Image 1 (spheres, rainbow, N blue to C red):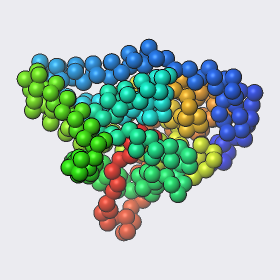
Image 2: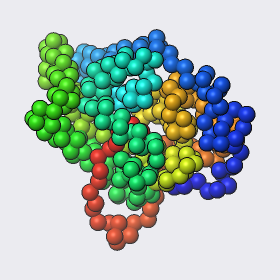
Image 3: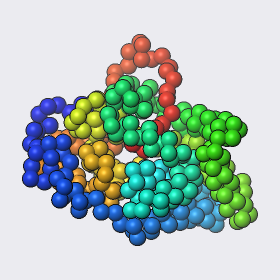
Image 4: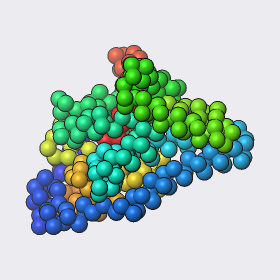
Length: 327
Protein backbone atom coordinates (compact mmCIF):
# COMPACT_ATOMS: atom_id res chain seq x y z
CA UNK A 1 0.00 0.00 0.00
CA UNK A 2 2.99 2.33 0.40
CA UNK A 3 3.89 4.71 -2.44
CA UNK A 4 7.29 4.03 -4.08
CA UNK A 5 10.17 6.43 -3.34
CA UNK A 6 10.07 7.94 -6.83
CA UNK A 7 6.67 9.57 -6.14
CA UNK A 8 7.93 11.10 -2.89
CA UNK A 9 10.21 13.93 -4.04
CA UNK A 10 12.42 15.65 -1.48
CA UNK A 11 11.51 19.28 -2.22
CA UNK A 12 11.19 20.81 1.25
CA UNK A 13 11.59 23.31 2.73
CA UNK A 14 10.27 26.03 0.45
CA UNK A 15 9.50 29.69 1.03
CA UNK A 16 5.94 28.68 2.07
CA UNK A 17 6.41 25.26 3.68
CA UNK A 18 8.78 23.98 6.36
CA UNK A 19 10.79 20.76 6.14
CA UNK A 20 7.82 18.84 7.65
CA UNK A 21 5.42 20.34 5.03
CA UNK A 22 3.68 22.56 7.57
CA UNK A 23 3.08 26.12 6.37
CA UNK A 24 5.54 28.78 7.48
CA UNK A 25 4.12 31.10 10.20
CA UNK A 26 2.75 33.82 7.92
CA UNK A 27 1.02 31.31 5.63
CA UNK A 28 -0.22 29.28 8.59
CA UNK A 29 -1.72 32.36 10.23
CA UNK A 30 -3.96 32.82 7.18
CA UNK A 31 -4.94 29.15 7.01
CA UNK A 32 -5.64 28.99 10.76
CA UNK A 33 -8.57 31.39 10.58
CA UNK A 34 -11.84 29.96 11.94
CA UNK A 35 -15.18 31.27 10.68
CA UNK A 36 -17.47 31.25 13.72
CA UNK A 37 -20.56 32.40 11.82
CA UNK A 38 -20.19 29.90 9.00
CA UNK A 39 -19.48 27.07 11.42
CA UNK A 40 -22.56 27.98 13.44
CA UNK A 41 -24.51 27.68 10.21
CA UNK A 42 -22.93 24.28 9.62
CA UNK A 43 -24.10 23.07 13.04
CA UNK A 44 -27.65 24.26 12.31
CA UNK A 45 -27.64 22.58 8.90
CA UNK A 46 -26.24 19.46 10.55
CA UNK A 47 -29.56 19.11 12.37
CA UNK A 48 -31.83 20.28 9.57
CA UNK A 49 -30.71 17.35 7.42
CA UNK A 50 -31.99 14.49 9.64
CA UNK A 51 -35.18 16.46 10.27
CA UNK A 52 -35.77 16.57 6.52
CA UNK A 53 -34.99 12.86 6.10
CA UNK A 54 -37.46 11.90 8.84
CA UNK A 55 -40.13 14.24 7.42
CA UNK A 56 -39.67 12.84 3.92
CA UNK A 57 -39.87 9.23 5.12
CA UNK A 58 -43.09 9.90 7.02
CA UNK A 59 -44.61 11.91 4.16
CA UNK A 60 -43.85 9.25 1.54
CA UNK A 61 -44.57 6.32 3.88
CA UNK A 62 -43.36 3.74 1.38
CA UNK A 63 -41.06 0.74 2.06
CA UNK A 64 -38.45 2.09 -0.35
CA UNK A 65 -38.58 5.49 1.37
CA UNK A 66 -38.19 3.90 4.80
CA UNK A 67 -35.19 1.86 3.67
CA UNK A 68 -33.59 4.89 2.00
CA UNK A 69 -34.13 6.94 5.16
CA UNK A 70 -32.55 4.18 7.26
CA UNK A 71 -29.41 4.22 5.08
CA UNK A 72 -29.21 8.01 4.78
CA UNK A 73 -29.56 8.41 8.55
CA UNK A 74 -26.37 6.39 8.86
CA UNK A 75 -24.72 9.27 7.02
CA UNK A 76 -25.97 11.59 9.78
CA UNK A 77 -23.47 9.99 12.13
CA UNK A 78 -20.73 10.64 9.61
CA UNK A 79 -21.67 14.32 9.83
CA UNK A 80 -21.73 14.21 13.63
CA UNK A 81 -18.47 12.29 13.76
CA UNK A 82 -16.49 14.55 11.45
CA UNK A 83 -17.80 17.82 12.88
CA UNK A 84 -17.19 16.37 16.36
CA UNK A 85 -13.64 15.59 15.22
CA UNK A 86 -13.29 19.28 14.37
CA UNK A 87 -14.50 20.23 17.84
CA UNK A 88 -12.07 17.72 19.38
CA UNK A 89 -9.27 19.62 17.64
CA UNK A 90 -10.82 22.85 19.03
CA UNK A 91 -11.17 24.22 15.50
CA UNK A 92 -14.96 24.60 15.38
CA UNK A 93 -15.20 27.92 17.26
CA UNK A 94 -12.52 30.36 18.34
CA UNK A 95 -13.81 30.50 21.94
CA UNK A 96 -12.82 27.33 23.77
CA UNK A 97 -15.90 27.21 25.99
CA UNK A 98 -18.26 27.56 23.01
CA UNK A 99 -16.30 25.01 20.99
CA UNK A 100 -16.39 22.46 23.81
CA UNK A 101 -20.05 23.00 24.77
CA UNK A 102 -21.32 22.74 21.21
CA UNK A 103 -18.93 19.87 20.51
CA UNK A 104 -20.22 17.90 23.49
CA UNK A 105 -23.95 18.59 23.67
CA UNK A 106 -24.92 19.25 20.05
CA UNK A 107 -22.48 16.93 18.24
CA UNK A 108 -20.55 14.30 20.21
CA UNK A 109 -23.13 13.15 22.76
CA UNK A 110 -25.91 12.82 20.15
CA UNK A 111 -23.44 10.73 18.14
CA UNK A 112 -22.77 8.40 21.13
CA UNK A 113 -19.23 9.78 21.57
CA UNK A 114 -17.49 10.84 24.80
CA UNK A 115 -15.51 13.72 23.37
CA UNK A 116 -12.88 14.13 26.10
CA UNK A 117 -11.61 10.52 26.03
CA UNK A 118 -11.86 10.63 22.25
CA UNK A 119 -9.74 13.78 22.15
CA UNK A 120 -7.00 12.15 24.24
CA UNK A 121 -7.02 9.02 22.10
CA UNK A 122 -7.09 11.01 18.90
CA UNK A 123 -4.12 13.15 19.89
CA UNK A 124 -2.16 9.92 20.45
CA UNK A 125 -3.07 8.96 16.89
CA UNK A 126 -1.73 12.25 15.53
CA UNK A 127 1.39 12.21 17.67
CA UNK A 128 2.74 9.02 16.10
CA UNK A 129 0.59 7.41 13.41
CA UNK A 130 0.99 3.63 13.41
CA UNK A 131 3.40 3.92 16.34
CA UNK A 132 3.30 1.85 19.56
CA UNK A 133 0.66 4.13 21.09
CA UNK A 134 -1.57 4.24 17.98
CA UNK A 135 -5.11 3.57 19.32
CA UNK A 136 -6.46 2.31 15.99
CA UNK A 137 -3.53 0.22 14.79
CA UNK A 138 -5.67 -2.95 14.72
CA UNK A 139 -8.02 -1.28 12.27
CA UNK A 140 -5.35 0.04 9.89
CA UNK A 141 -2.85 -2.83 9.90
CA UNK A 142 -3.02 -6.06 7.93
CA UNK A 143 -3.70 -4.46 4.55
CA UNK A 144 -3.82 -5.31 1.78
CA UNK A 145 -6.11 -8.18 2.79
CA UNK A 146 -8.21 -10.65 0.87
CA UNK A 147 -11.59 -9.65 -0.58
CA UNK A 148 -13.31 -12.17 1.69
CA UNK A 149 -11.65 -10.75 4.79
CA UNK A 150 -12.80 -7.20 4.08
CA UNK A 151 -16.24 -8.49 3.11
CA UNK A 152 -16.56 -10.29 6.46
CA UNK A 153 -15.67 -7.13 8.35
CA UNK A 154 -18.18 -5.03 6.42
CA UNK A 155 -20.84 -7.71 6.86
CA UNK A 156 -20.36 -7.62 10.63
CA UNK A 157 -20.72 -3.86 10.46
CA UNK A 158 -23.88 -4.03 8.35
CA UNK A 159 -25.49 -6.72 10.54
CA UNK A 160 -25.24 -4.64 13.77
CA UNK A 161 -22.52 -6.85 15.29
CA UNK A 162 -19.90 -4.08 15.44
CA UNK A 163 -22.55 -1.61 16.57
CA UNK A 164 -23.60 -3.81 19.47
CA UNK A 165 -19.94 -4.24 20.48
CA UNK A 166 -19.73 -0.45 20.69
CA UNK A 167 -23.06 0.00 22.46
CA UNK A 168 -22.52 -2.57 25.22
CA UNK A 169 -19.65 -0.72 26.97
CA UNK A 170 -21.68 2.50 26.96
CA UNK A 171 -24.64 0.74 28.60
CA UNK A 172 -22.39 -0.91 31.18
CA UNK A 173 -20.81 2.45 32.04
CA UNK A 174 -24.24 4.06 32.36
CA UNK A 175 -25.36 1.21 34.65
CA UNK A 176 -22.27 1.94 36.78
CA UNK A 177 -23.38 5.61 36.85
CA UNK A 178 -20.45 6.92 34.84
CA UNK A 179 -21.20 10.66 34.43
CA UNK A 180 -20.22 10.91 30.76
CA UNK A 181 -22.17 7.78 29.80
CA UNK A 182 -25.22 9.18 31.61
CA UNK A 183 -24.86 12.47 29.70
CA UNK A 184 -24.73 10.59 26.41
CA UNK A 185 -27.84 8.58 27.27
CA UNK A 186 -29.52 11.74 28.53
CA UNK A 187 -28.88 13.36 25.17
CA UNK A 188 -30.34 10.30 23.47
CA UNK A 189 -33.43 10.75 25.66
CA UNK A 190 -33.80 14.25 24.19
CA UNK A 191 -33.66 12.79 20.68
CA UNK A 192 -36.29 10.24 21.73
CA UNK A 193 -38.42 13.08 23.08
CA UNK A 194 -38.19 14.83 19.70
CA UNK A 195 -39.46 11.71 17.92
CA UNK A 196 -42.18 11.37 20.56
CA UNK A 197 -43.22 14.99 20.03
CA UNK A 198 -44.05 14.25 16.37
CA UNK A 199 -46.00 11.17 17.41
CA UNK A 200 -43.48 8.59 16.16
CA UNK A 201 -41.36 7.43 19.13
CA UNK A 202 -40.65 4.09 17.39
CA UNK A 203 -38.59 5.95 14.79
CA UNK A 204 -35.99 6.69 17.46
CA UNK A 205 -34.99 3.06 17.11
CA UNK A 206 -35.45 2.63 13.36
CA UNK A 207 -34.12 6.01 12.19
CA UNK A 208 -31.58 6.78 14.91
CA UNK A 209 -30.16 3.94 16.99
CA UNK A 210 -30.17 1.25 14.29
CA UNK A 211 -28.57 3.47 11.59
CA UNK A 212 -25.81 4.22 14.10
CA UNK A 213 -25.36 0.48 14.61
CA UNK A 214 -25.32 -0.52 10.93
CA UNK A 215 -24.87 1.84 7.93
CA UNK A 216 -22.72 4.23 9.96
CA UNK A 217 -20.42 1.36 10.92
CA UNK A 218 -19.93 0.47 7.26
CA UNK A 219 -19.31 4.08 6.25
CA UNK A 220 -16.94 4.65 9.14
CA UNK A 221 -14.80 1.60 8.40
CA UNK A 222 -14.55 2.45 4.70
CA UNK A 223 -13.52 6.02 5.49
CA UNK A 224 -10.96 5.01 8.12
CA UNK A 225 -9.34 2.46 5.79
CA UNK A 226 -9.17 5.05 3.03
CA UNK A 227 -7.27 7.33 5.43
CA UNK A 228 -4.60 5.02 6.83
CA UNK A 229 -5.24 1.42 5.76
CA UNK A 230 -1.96 -0.41 5.11
CA UNK A 231 0.26 2.59 5.76
CA UNK A 232 3.30 2.67 8.06
CA UNK A 233 4.95 4.58 10.87
CA UNK A 234 6.96 7.53 9.50
CA UNK A 235 7.70 11.21 10.02
CA UNK A 236 6.77 11.64 6.35
CA UNK A 237 2.98 11.91 6.37
CA UNK A 238 2.87 10.69 2.78
CA UNK A 239 3.73 7.26 4.21
CA UNK A 240 1.16 7.38 7.01
CA UNK A 241 -1.87 8.81 5.21
CA UNK A 242 -3.51 8.22 1.84
CA UNK A 243 -4.70 10.99 -0.45
CA UNK A 244 -7.75 10.25 -2.61
CA UNK A 245 -9.19 12.35 -5.43
CA UNK A 246 -12.35 13.96 -4.13
CA UNK A 247 -15.78 13.67 -5.73
CA UNK A 248 -19.18 15.06 -4.78
CA UNK A 249 -20.59 11.59 -4.15
CA UNK A 250 -17.72 10.64 -1.83
CA UNK A 251 -17.95 13.95 0.01
CA UNK A 252 -21.67 13.36 0.55
CA UNK A 253 -21.41 9.79 1.87
CA UNK A 254 -17.93 9.17 3.20
CA UNK A 255 -15.88 12.32 3.77
CA UNK A 256 -18.03 15.36 4.63
CA UNK A 257 -16.56 18.62 5.91
CA UNK A 258 -13.40 18.30 3.76
CA UNK A 259 -12.10 15.35 5.75
CA UNK A 260 -11.17 13.76 2.43
CA UNK A 261 -8.17 16.11 2.33
CA UNK A 262 -6.80 13.93 5.08
CA UNK A 263 -3.13 14.09 4.17
CA UNK A 264 -3.28 17.87 4.57
CA UNK A 265 -4.98 17.40 7.95
CA UNK A 266 -2.16 15.14 9.16
CA UNK A 267 0.48 17.54 7.87
CA UNK A 268 -0.96 20.27 10.11
CA UNK A 269 -3.69 19.36 12.60
CA UNK A 270 -4.22 23.02 13.46
CA UNK A 271 -5.84 23.93 10.14
CA UNK A 272 -9.68 24.10 10.27
CA UNK A 273 -11.69 22.00 7.86
CA UNK A 274 -12.68 24.84 5.54
CA UNK A 275 -9.02 25.54 4.70
CA UNK A 276 -7.74 21.98 4.20
CA UNK A 277 -8.15 22.19 0.38
CA UNK A 278 -6.03 25.36 0.42
CA UNK A 279 -3.30 23.61 2.40
CA UNK A 280 -3.48 20.69 -0.03
CA UNK A 281 -3.01 23.14 -2.91
CA UNK A 282 0.11 24.44 -1.16
CA UNK A 283 1.48 20.89 -0.93
CA UNK A 284 0.81 20.31 -4.62
CA UNK A 285 2.29 23.66 -5.66
CA UNK A 286 5.48 22.85 -3.74
CA UNK A 287 5.78 19.53 -5.59
CA UNK A 288 5.55 17.59 -2.32
CA UNK A 289 2.27 15.93 -3.36
CA UNK A 290 2.55 14.51 -6.86
CA UNK A 291 -0.20 13.23 -9.17
CA UNK A 292 1.16 9.68 -8.78
CA UNK A 293 0.56 9.86 -5.03
CA UNK A 294 -3.18 10.38 -5.48
CA UNK A 295 -5.59 7.46 -5.59
CA UNK A 296 -8.07 8.10 -8.43
CA UNK A 297 -11.13 7.20 -6.34
CA UNK A 298 -12.19 5.64 -3.06
CA UNK A 299 -13.40 2.56 -4.90
CA UNK A 300 -9.96 2.13 -6.49
CA UNK A 301 -8.30 2.40 -3.08
CA UNK A 302 -10.71 -0.08 -1.46
CA UNK A 303 -10.04 -2.54 -4.27
CA UNK A 304 -6.31 -2.18 -3.65
CA UNK A 305 -6.84 -2.69 0.09
CA UNK A 306 -8.64 -5.96 -0.70
CA UNK A 307 -6.24 -7.18 -3.40
CA UNK A 308 -4.30 -9.80 -1.46
CA UNK A 309 -4.51 -13.25 -3.11
CA UNK A 310 -6.40 -15.86 -1.13
CA UNK A 311 -4.28 -18.53 0.57
CA UNK A 312 -5.23 -21.51 2.73
CA UNK A 313 -4.48 -19.51 5.89
CA UNK A 314 -6.38 -16.45 4.69
CA UNK A 315 -9.47 -18.56 4.05
CA UNK A 316 -10.10 -19.02 7.77
CA UNK A 317 -12.58 -16.55 9.32
CA UNK A 318 -11.03 -13.97 11.59
CA UNK A 319 -12.46 -11.64 14.18
CA UNK A 320 -12.36 -7.91 13.48
CA UNK A 321 -12.14 -4.71 15.41
CA UNK A 322 -14.87 -2.12 15.63
CA UNK A 323 -14.45 0.96 13.44
CA UNK A 324 -12.44 3.83 14.82
CA UNK A 325 -13.70 7.36 15.30
CA UNK A 326 -12.76 10.01 12.74
CA UNK A 327 -8.97 10.32 12.53
